[in-house]
Length: 282
Image (cartoon, rainbow, N blue to C red; front, side, top):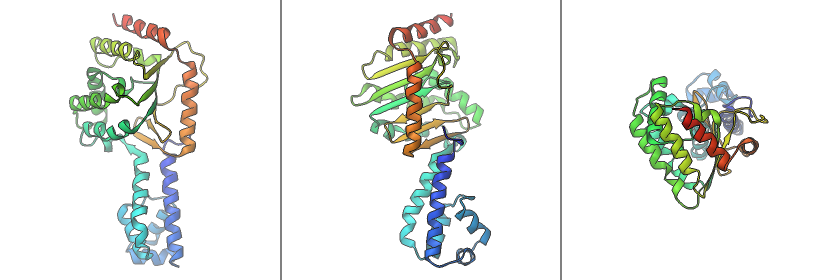
């Protein structure tokens, strides 16, 4: 995996910074000249061009105007926003509550044909019951110090899971056995969640694999990640969501998923692990 979880975002910013540098050189401006035209310090121009300081949309507009390259502004602003979306802090995403964040990904879910999901800590969102989701999201809101709209957010999370029951979507889902034992909510909530896993795993478009405690590890337990076709990987860290679109990195996550899938059990063996976890609640 990449050395830094924000490497994709930094890489995108470096590409953007290089394009800004090209505009300056094409306009035959020094960094000092550009700074004078933009009304900021030469040090700021240098930091932006070396990708040490992320440029704001306003910075990019000023830069393009100074270079006489107004026709480049829209594309560069769009590239800048895409870089910002690659590494999004949860507290920023949830600053007005979590319901909006659930709703914003609905178009992505509806457009995806093949989901590959690996979770080492909690049940994947698309397989969560409303009670489990409410308990989990409330805990997250408390930890982050963000508004707790867990009930509304959980309802939205359940609504976006309608893709499970519609044609044209395939789901390959992997969980570590620890997920079955981690107590999210009370015993009744966990029992309901585990029972739902038993029900949903019989759907013809769903492959649910459990990686047992006893599995010989060929890949260590990783952070949770979602693969949306071969277009995007979303990785869930403690402080941020990382959205990867670079083909080489998507290929790496796909490789990890494939090797993790080889360690999982399916069908009756997976059902036995889930049922054992239900019994463990007694």
